[in-house]
Length: 91
Image (tube, rainbow, N blue to C red; front, side, top):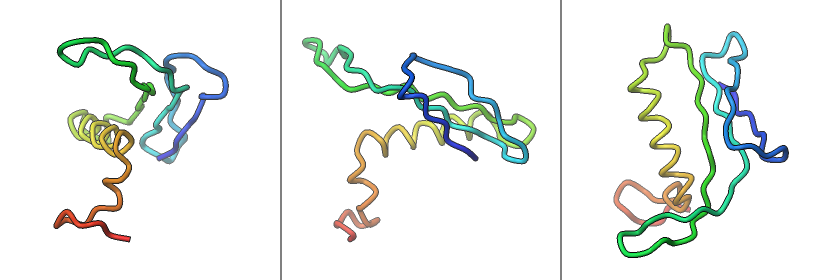
C-alpha cells in the first residue's frame, strides 16, 4: 500500500492509481476549514479529503470502507494511538 499526498497542490479529491504489486493507495489532499453542523449551529472544523483506491480482486469493499473509517477516527483523535486497550496512556 502507498500513500500519495497532493496537499501542496490543492484540490478536493483525486483518484490515485495503484502501484503494482501493491493492492491499495490512499490519496490525501489539502486540509481545509469547513462549517459542520453540530445540531445547534455550524462550527468550523478542519476537514481533509481521503481517497482510497484498491484492487477488488484482493480487498473486499466493506473491509476497505472499515479501514478508511478507522483511519479517519485515528486521524481525528491521534491520542488514541497512545492508548492501551485498558484505556490508560501507553508511552
